[in-house]
Length: 379
Image: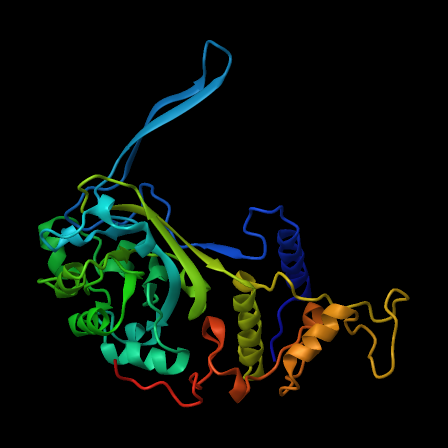
């Protein structure tokens, strides 16, 4: 069984603990994941679009004795991590400056279709896959920002692996190969769910071979914008986090650069810890999986022979003590205890999910719906 390096986890726990001491008004107790690729000379754009250019206008020390730096940049709307406004493919629909911010801030869900996309780089994400996600994780919440993880974000910024070709110009469009959303899945979403936006880690919400961009048309006719070239989706749980996607406010724009962030709370990091332990149980190396979502409030393992910890009846050396430990014990409700990993994870209450847990936050895989039955696949 492979276990995470204790030194690495200790450093991460120290980082999380320091976050809890942050002053009021900060994001104390929440982890922020950047879902945005940086804009530079390697940024990927559509083959027919120009790339990102940064021109240095001034850089250096002035005669007045102070340092001054200023640049100019130019960019096509649709490149890098960006948003497609509905007007991009739907006449009369919202332009970039008209999209309500409420649509771009909301609960996030990640639908992981990376296995299917690894088998077929032109894979179309189906309505059945979205419904299968709901059976496992619960109904997509109203106002959600749905993120499709194809796994292609791992190829960035290699244009050939990411898009299917490194060529530019109109003739290169026919050589594009990457996954996207099936038009029927787009129809299912707009007909049966109320989502704020949808995004994925490829250059387009339609797959590479598309010539009619039907998924774009369906979504944008319903004023549902799309986020494209989203980064770091592999760092997110299936649900239980919030997304903030704030684009440049370009009047009458059909799209533009966007900075996207995911905000993870304490429940998510605990779910990640449980998922890590589950992977260890089947012999998989999960050491790299815990780092993005380490619990900020995870208890430290006490010294094994320290006078600072009193040892009461039935308490083993190093066990957590005090009101926090008792609250955790009560909260666990006597559920099935999983064997504890060694190292800094000692004392963290991990347990297998119980039926009364119903749907767990953050994609902890519970098959039980709110009424104790499985979630039906229909709308």
